[in-house]
Length: 277
Image (spheres, one colour):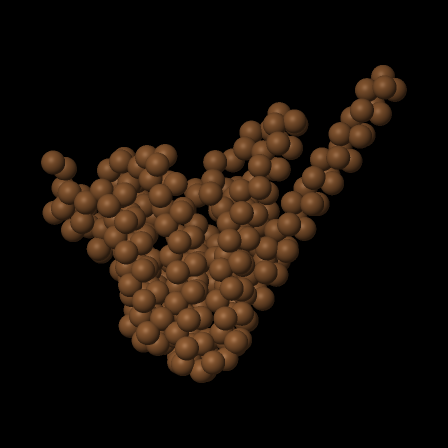
């Protein structure tokens, strides 16, 4: 059996990832993945199930108004969820079923934890705003993960019609989340002096995506940062993170609309030129 090194594990990290994962999860997940790969027979699917079980424990803690333990266990659940992908890429043992299990497990964890937070705080205070909070978090998360693959399908349909190759994303939503600069390979990116370009190159060197908030940061704000801060922070932090995530989603939809509009204009122009010729 091959013995893996920490450098081998580092090679399994995504080319660009959320800043929360890069700075606060990957440093732990990589060191956990190393003994898991070398000393255990745990499979990626087994780790995904473990992550889901920990997510259920986190939801139970939230439901019992144990916010700090719930936040800690949620972080562990997400960290293990990162480890399963690293093991799959390291050993080449990923499967299509594993992708489905990971995707569904993430959604179940979020819904359970949102429900646990709402139940625990409503039982304690009788404040209906916590019920609204739990429902809003679940709906926003589900909307994001329903919307992303649909936008990806639209882009693929347009590229197929134009016979353009579709860049291979690193996960189901990454391609939709990238800014135009992020889609340009780093060694071919423009070397302009504008601040956005310099910032993007700086973030790319550190494997960080250029957008401020995605689903990962949203989950971290609601289920880790806010509970650690205390019950007073649950509603304002969740509302702020939700508003930022929704703004990001609206921006992505707008970008997709612009993309389809450009395609429609180009197709119309080509059709007119064909008729004139």
